[in-house]
Length: 155
Image 1 (cartoon, rainbow, N blue to C red):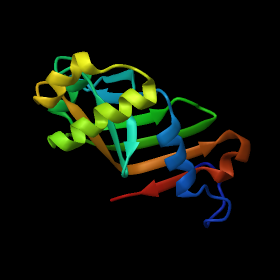
Image 2 (image 1 turned 120 degrees about the horizontal axis):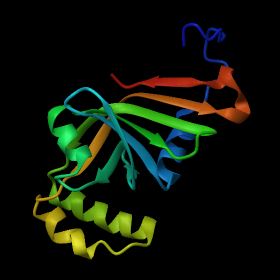
Image 3 (image 1 turned 180 degrees about the vertical axis):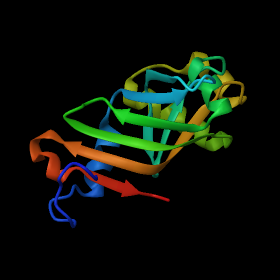
Image 4 (image 1 turned 60 degrees about the vertical axis):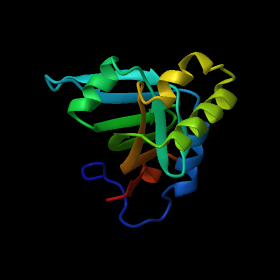
């Protein structure tokens, strides 16, 4: 992190498990997409961290979905700023029906929310589920201070 005066090397950096645990346990996530005029759009979503991919659903006509249809680059952040995980990546629509079924089941369990009203649209591919594969992830733990700020590269 040039310009922050951080020490060289890996000593004191956060382990990947720290970031993955927070991606999995977060209740709400912030997603940032880009509008056609290049202005950012930030919204709260529910989602899942599953097998190294962040999954979330939205309506096909939502601003998020319309933005992603033109520019798949996005950022996803966990809800707790004092233990922040920020994921930058590419959102791709999940087309596999088995994974869509699993998403519904796991979201219902995680959020204690009945998704049956949305199931037909999700399983018929009328409504999107996106998977965001990380390219870069940042982890910042306020208790460990700035020298523990960590960057993981996936490209």
